[in-house]
Image (cartoon, rainbow, N blue to C red; front, side):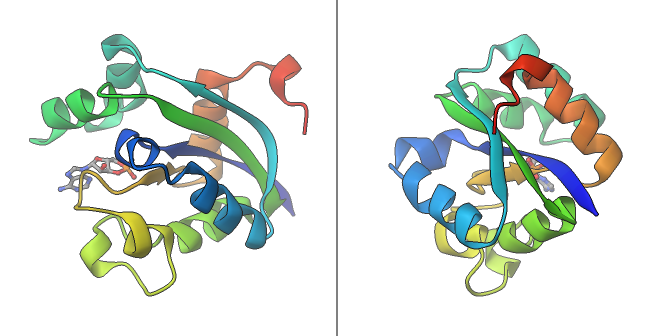
Length: 139
Ligand code: CMP
Protein backbone atom coordinates (compact mmCIF):
# COMPACT_ATOMS: atom_id res chain seq x y z
CA UNK A 1 0.00 0.00 0.00
CA UNK A 2 1.34 3.46 -0.88
CA UNK A 3 2.46 5.19 2.27
CA UNK A 4 4.29 8.35 3.34
CA UNK A 5 7.24 8.69 5.66
CA UNK A 6 9.19 11.68 6.93
CA UNK A 7 12.98 12.13 6.70
CA UNK A 8 15.55 14.51 8.16
CA UNK A 9 19.09 14.69 6.81
CA UNK A 10 20.71 15.83 10.06
CA UNK A 11 23.19 18.71 10.63
CA UNK A 12 26.30 16.50 10.68
CA UNK A 13 25.46 15.06 7.26
CA UNK A 14 24.53 18.41 5.71
CA UNK A 15 27.74 19.95 7.10
CA UNK A 16 29.85 17.17 5.52
CA UNK A 17 28.27 17.66 2.08
CA UNK A 18 26.39 14.36 2.11
CA UNK A 19 22.93 15.57 1.03
CA UNK A 20 23.43 14.46 -2.59
CA UNK A 21 24.76 11.00 -1.63
CA UNK A 22 21.89 10.39 0.77
CA UNK A 23 19.21 11.61 -1.67
CA UNK A 24 20.68 9.27 -4.31
CA UNK A 25 20.41 6.33 -1.89
CA UNK A 26 16.80 7.35 -1.17
CA UNK A 27 15.92 7.56 -4.87
CA UNK A 28 17.73 4.30 -5.71
CA UNK A 29 15.75 2.49 -3.01
CA UNK A 30 12.49 3.35 -4.75
CA UNK A 31 11.32 6.08 -2.39
CA UNK A 32 9.80 9.04 -4.24
CA UNK A 33 10.39 12.55 -2.91
CA UNK A 34 7.00 14.25 -2.54
CA UNK A 35 8.24 17.38 -0.74
CA UNK A 36 11.59 18.73 0.45
CA UNK A 37 13.23 21.82 1.98
CA UNK A 38 16.37 22.94 3.81
CA UNK A 39 15.89 24.83 7.05
CA UNK A 40 17.51 25.55 10.36
CA UNK A 41 15.45 24.32 13.31
CA UNK A 42 14.77 26.63 16.21
CA UNK A 43 15.27 25.27 19.73
CA UNK A 44 11.48 25.22 20.21
CA UNK A 45 10.95 23.33 16.94
CA UNK A 46 13.59 20.73 17.83
CA UNK A 47 12.18 20.29 21.35
CA UNK A 48 8.68 19.90 19.94
CA UNK A 49 9.73 17.44 17.27
CA UNK A 50 11.55 15.22 19.76
CA UNK A 51 9.07 15.78 22.64
CA UNK A 52 8.59 12.01 22.97
CA UNK A 53 12.24 11.80 24.13
CA UNK A 54 12.10 14.70 26.60
CA UNK A 55 12.69 12.52 29.68
CA UNK A 56 15.64 10.70 28.08
CA UNK A 57 19.14 11.60 29.33
CA UNK A 58 20.29 12.52 25.82
CA UNK A 59 17.44 15.01 25.15
CA UNK A 60 19.39 18.22 25.85
CA UNK A 61 22.36 17.18 23.72
CA UNK A 62 20.04 15.97 20.95
CA UNK A 63 18.28 19.35 20.77
CA UNK A 64 21.63 21.20 20.76
CA UNK A 65 22.85 19.01 17.93
CA UNK A 66 19.68 19.37 15.86
CA UNK A 67 19.88 23.19 15.96
CA UNK A 68 23.63 23.27 15.26
CA UNK A 69 23.22 23.71 11.50
CA UNK A 70 20.80 23.34 8.61
CA UNK A 71 18.84 20.13 8.00
CA UNK A 72 17.05 18.84 4.92
CA UNK A 73 13.52 17.62 5.64
CA UNK A 74 11.51 15.61 3.15
CA UNK A 75 8.38 13.55 2.65
CA UNK A 76 8.97 10.20 0.98
CA UNK A 77 6.38 8.00 -0.72
CA UNK A 78 6.41 4.31 -1.61
CA UNK A 79 4.73 1.03 -0.85
CA UNK A 80 5.62 0.43 2.82
CA UNK A 81 7.61 3.68 2.87
CA UNK A 82 8.12 3.64 6.66
CA UNK A 83 9.74 0.21 6.77
CA UNK A 84 11.56 0.74 3.48
CA UNK A 85 13.23 3.91 4.76
CA UNK A 86 13.98 2.42 8.18
CA UNK A 87 15.72 -0.45 6.41
CA UNK A 88 17.69 1.96 4.24
CA UNK A 89 18.77 4.04 7.27
CA UNK A 90 19.86 1.06 9.38
CA UNK A 91 20.06 0.86 13.18
CA UNK A 92 20.05 4.08 15.23
CA UNK A 93 23.62 3.38 16.33
CA UNK A 94 25.82 3.44 13.19
CA UNK A 95 28.13 0.88 14.83
CA UNK A 96 25.21 -1.59 14.78
CA UNK A 97 23.84 -0.64 11.35
CA UNK A 98 24.01 -3.15 8.48
CA UNK A 99 26.43 -2.74 5.57
CA UNK A 100 25.09 -0.54 2.79
CA UNK A 101 22.76 1.49 5.02
CA UNK A 102 22.90 5.28 5.29
CA UNK A 103 23.93 5.23 8.95
CA UNK A 104 26.61 2.59 8.39
CA UNK A 105 28.09 4.64 5.54
CA UNK A 106 27.69 8.11 6.97
CA UNK A 107 26.73 8.03 10.67
CA UNK A 108 29.36 9.17 13.18
CA UNK A 109 27.83 7.95 16.46
CA UNK A 110 24.45 7.16 18.05
CA UNK A 111 23.53 10.86 18.18
CA UNK A 112 25.18 12.18 15.01
CA UNK A 113 23.64 9.40 12.93
CA UNK A 114 23.11 11.27 9.63
CA UNK A 115 19.35 10.84 9.27
CA UNK A 116 15.97 10.46 10.94
CA UNK A 117 12.97 8.51 9.67
CA UNK A 118 9.50 8.01 11.12
CA UNK A 119 9.03 4.89 13.25
CA UNK A 120 5.48 4.12 12.08
CA UNK A 121 2.67 5.41 9.83
CA UNK A 122 0.95 7.38 12.61
CA UNK A 123 4.22 9.07 13.62
CA UNK A 124 4.86 9.77 9.94
CA UNK A 125 1.56 11.64 9.61
CA UNK A 126 2.38 13.76 12.68
CA UNK A 127 5.95 14.45 11.56
CA UNK A 128 4.95 15.33 7.97
CA UNK A 129 2.35 17.79 9.28
CA UNK A 130 4.94 19.31 11.66
CA UNK A 131 6.96 20.58 8.67
CA UNK A 132 4.77 20.59 5.54
CA UNK A 133 1.35 21.80 4.51
CA UNK A 134 -0.74 20.24 1.74
CA UNK A 135 0.34 22.86 -0.86
CA UNK A 136 3.98 21.84 -0.40
CA UNK A 137 3.31 18.18 -1.27
CA UNK A 138 4.12 18.70 -4.92
CA UNK A 139 5.91 15.51 -5.93
P1 CMP B 1 16.45 9.54 15.68
O1 CMP B 1 16.09 8.36 14.86
O2 CMP B 1 16.27 10.88 15.06
O3 CMP B 1 15.60 9.50 17.05
C1 CMP B 1 16.05 10.08 18.26
C2 CMP B 1 17.46 10.55 18.17
O4 CMP B 1 18.11 10.73 19.41
C3 CMP B 1 18.32 9.50 17.48
O5 CMP B 1 17.99 9.40 16.12
C4 CMP B 1 19.72 10.01 17.79
O6 CMP B 1 20.11 11.09 16.95
C5 CMP B 1 19.52 10.58 19.21
N1 CMP B 1 20.10 9.75 20.27
C6 CMP B 1 21.15 10.10 21.05
N2 CMP B 1 21.42 9.16 21.94
C7 CMP B 1 20.53 8.16 21.75
C8 CMP B 1 20.32 6.91 22.38
N3 CMP B 1 21.08 6.48 23.40
N4 CMP B 1 19.31 6.13 21.93
C9 CMP B 1 18.52 6.56 20.89
N5 CMP B 1 18.68 7.76 20.27
C10 CMP B 1 19.69 8.55 20.68
